[in-house]
Image 1 (cartoon, rainbow, N blue to C red):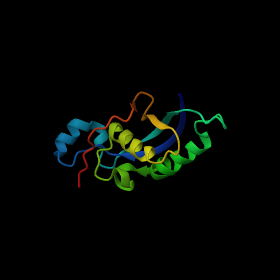
Image 2 (cartoon, helix red, strand yellow; image 1 turned 30 degrees about the vertical axis):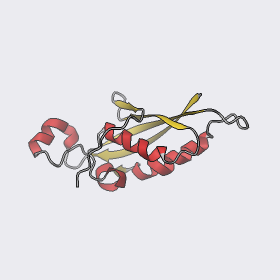
Image 3 (cartoon, rainbow, N blue to C red; image 1 turned 180 degrees about the horizontal axis):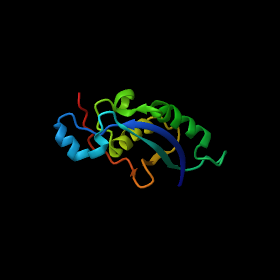
Amino acid sequence: MVYITRRAVFSAAHRLFNPTFTDNQNEQTYDKCNNLWGHGHNYTLEVTIKGVPNSETGYLIDLKDLKAIMNEVIVSKVDHKHLNIDVEMFKGVITSLENIAAIFWNELSKNLPVGELYRIKILETENNWIEYYGEPFEIKRFN
């Protein structure tokens, strides 16, 4: 079994808020991340897949192919976008790192031609990141 990781970067804005909370509750819960107009990050996305390399190529997956999948499925949809407003996969979702990672997992796992998605790591800042290994949890959608 091998584990291979590809990194991509993108810039995006988002606003953390729960539409069922009062303005005061949102402010207390999300502080400056609840800014009405949102705020931005330069995200780093790391995608790790696991599997057995192909004996003919020596590859689990050609990294050019993984890059293309990540760009098509994730980066092209979120780069320089407002996640809450512009990105369909986040409509009605609190755009916490936890929810972003799980939604990215769901989108990527459906599009891998070989191997198995093992880990998604998203760095929001140099001090804040998440690692997600696919354990399911409920993502509440508000409409």
